[in-house]
Image 1 (spheres, rainbow, N blue to C red):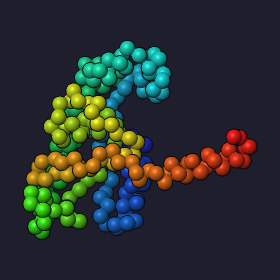
Image 2: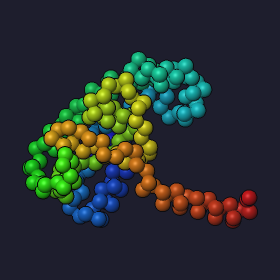
Image 3: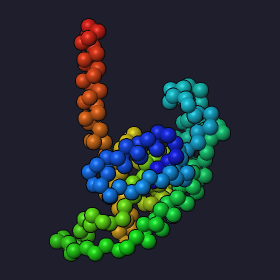
Image 4: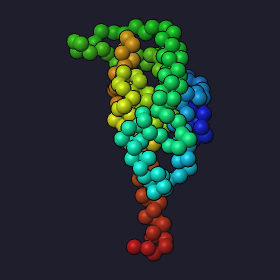
Length: 199
């Protein structure tokens, strides 16, 4: 499931292709979900961070201090975002709950469940930083005032497992899979410097 914006749709398509290449039919069909669209930033849309800070410094500082009280001029409020995210999550969790139960073998460690079976229902969400902050707070039952508590890197991976309806944060903001891209970029920059004779 992904935000309908082009950048997330393209990322979701690439991830789905990679999953199909490795796991075949395990890849779920792609589905755009309007509830995952990034927070509307009104007059800040399309501006670089430095431009927002230069033009709207006080408002930006207020938004970082009190995200439920301050927002971009003409932008969406966090409470509005939470309503649509919760609606999307409710529908998603209902679909996952309707999947047939999976039998599990006993665990070797008392008090800890075994890892999920390969056919355990799962979903991959491809979305945006602000929406993922609201999603994680919602799933973990934390107040929206904690909006800035969880960073999300571009293409970072977080994993939330639901055990008998209880969310468990298994991994957050993993970016190690991006290292080869950084290596390729560094190599290309080095080659370009060498070609141009730059130091």
